[in-house]
Image (cartoon, rainbow, N blue to C red; front, side):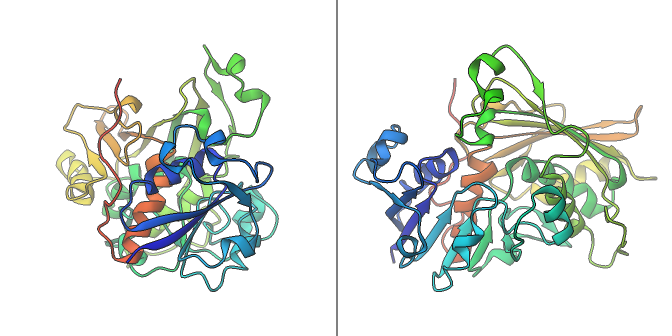
Length: 357
């Protein structure tokens, strides 16, 4: 069976990456691409690297144009997807690459985003440990999927094995991320101009204000063993110091995350938690002891590569994870989740091979 697909936000970075991956997918036909201000223009004018899709023209983003497809991808700015998802009730599968359907807490949405709250959908990070299982199981047959935030999924994948196994204390998580500006989208912003970022590293959303914090907390709460006592505290026992730093690379995330070692836990138990979580995974790989990833190793790939260190002097576990924010961080996760939902081979159209140099 060939599935018909519409991609909204097709002139942007996330939409373009979704199209790049889907262009090599044998089970889908990209039938419709939409945009807002760029509607009426050839797709190739805005995505000149997508030569095989040069025949497509950007149409207006309306519920009527998006309807009538088997699958709709929404790659729109945060807060804009909900107005369309409400009108796509007859579409068999809708995947939102924005934040509108990620959060379970209305309070978190109001604090970090604002605007209308929409119901949470199945979270699109298949490898994420969830109460003794994997998020993959929840994606089977799903009709509505919320693709992750790139920073959020990177940090969540980094630490969820330790939370699930009880070998770290999630009440004192510190994570610092070097991120490329493509994660902010194509909209013109002064702080993203080349003259502002070249030769400089620039922190932003410092001091607990980044929108991905509640998404990480939500994922790590879900990773706890099902029998573990829950807390009604606003942070639900997951305290995160999260500092992203904009660096002059077009795409990529390098997240360095640490948390205290739980009392009485051995080094073998710590590393064993991550090996048990990801030892059989294709797209999330733990590197051998003493090795750590580079963002250059994952560009264009659907892989999250991570290195783990045990700092006994500081009594902390340190995990360094590299992803391509547009691929594994967004579009790759969305297509991987689509494959699972439809019962296709999970790795269809996705690669573990990056592009170098």
